[in-house]
Length: 503
Length: 58
Image 1 (tube, rainbow over the protein chains, first blue to last red):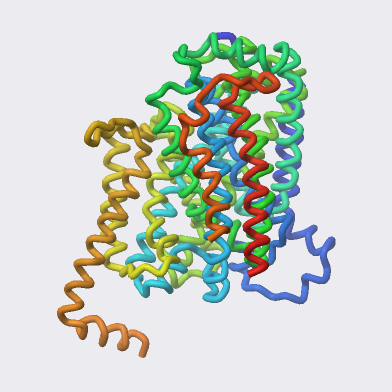
Image 2 (image 1 turned 120 degrees about the horizontal axis):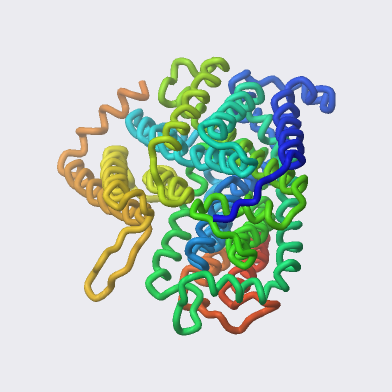
């Protein structure tokens, strides 16, 4: 294993940029009014201000806030790690982050309008109002909370990875990751990530543009880079780039990731904090710009092979590549970009999950900012637990595990927008079956995100999340029909109850 | 209806993997597999923009 050790310049530059971003972000309450006096007239409850930024973010802030959800440790550490280990297969993140935008365009403005009209702050709020069911609200809230933990864990791993690359070992890198995240979120609320998302994006752009220009120059151009990389990866016959039995996992992982992406509490927070439905539509047109950069970052996994990086810890691929080809001070800057790029979304995730706890799991305490902060801290402790106790082969498996859980809220939240006759008991039954089935498969497969199925003459590995969603939808539909038939026999049974509840 | 088709095109073009699971033709050093998928990014932006315009007209 060849590891280049950084010198003090890398560590110094890293600390300078990382600390500067945290300080700027977490003191935003104090300097923001100086820049923007006219906003003083609008009053929001403190909780709405901390959690939804007052629902006043325009096109630009939304672009950075929502787009920033894709520039996480997922993009910069986990995807290149998978590409390094599996070649073209890891590239499924690219179709995922393309097809997600037509989906956002079609669905999210409707959801935003419902949330605005009803004053809802979370997915669980929306579902409770639509189906008049406290149980369904709890189901959706718990899914959001549990799903976001491994996703935050992935961000902590991202920060830990760069601190390790700076030469530190043992528990210190993880502790550093956790403490910086906790301090940053506690002080800043949603305004901190929204505004520092800008700094973070600029830093990541600089790091990535430098990498995708300088690395191929080092290696003799993109053609030579692709050629050199294939020699280090398992050979694939027939002029293909991914082997034939990987095509179904590739497509189904892309599809399930795209459906899951905006069901998470943190991504939905970014959407609901937009100023108008048209802000979201406009963003769906321009957000794909992020995807180009994501694709180039994914290629860092191949560049690492071409640059002769050999490591058994795949998460270290990008940091080791930067250390190998950049001067150490610039590697330090890139590490700060990665760490901030993990910190900002992790903070949005913790706030989204804290919103769920405060609004939906403990509704009576929903106005206390200290309570929200404590809930956010609890979420981060849970994520820390995921890093320590879940032993996934790839960091990306943590994100895909979150996807399996959050996808089970798809029928209630998204299919609930369609003119289908779905009832709360049917949706709860579907949710429970899908969740149990999906988590059971993940457990049996050792956290692997795909499961082999055989159906007639057809056999392939399919995304576990999509399989579980299939079970969920079938159970929801069947239960729904059974309940409708039962009601058809005696239509009076549910009628008086709903009338009583309104009165 | 037109809007639905515009929005479904990226799904069709990207989820049928055998369609683009090829090394050749190479463009600027990029195997077909990679540049085909990257090319869908601007195409998707334009398709969504067209759907947005169609929305506003109706």
